[in-house]
Image 1 (cartoon, rainbow, N blue to C red):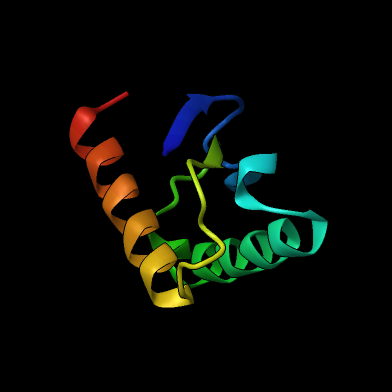
Image 2: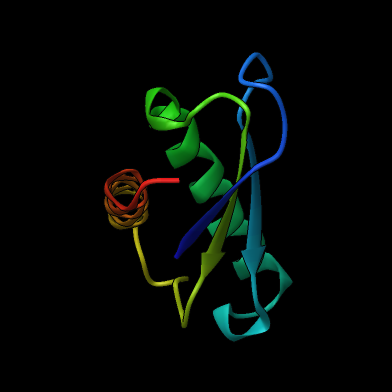
Length: 86
């Protein structure tokens, strides 16, 4: 799930934060999911709007999810956010 809020002027770069809860597993597993999400956010950089802050939160057990699954999920969430509007 991705939520968004306007936090600064459009000249500021987009900011991304990650929330991976304990349900995702132990510390090692959560860090793995966080690293995969960071890589996915880098690959979808063009979809991130300048001047906005994004919170990417993981729901459920995402440790079993591959990078491709997480990247697709992030892409879908960003698209839904764009369609929803500000």
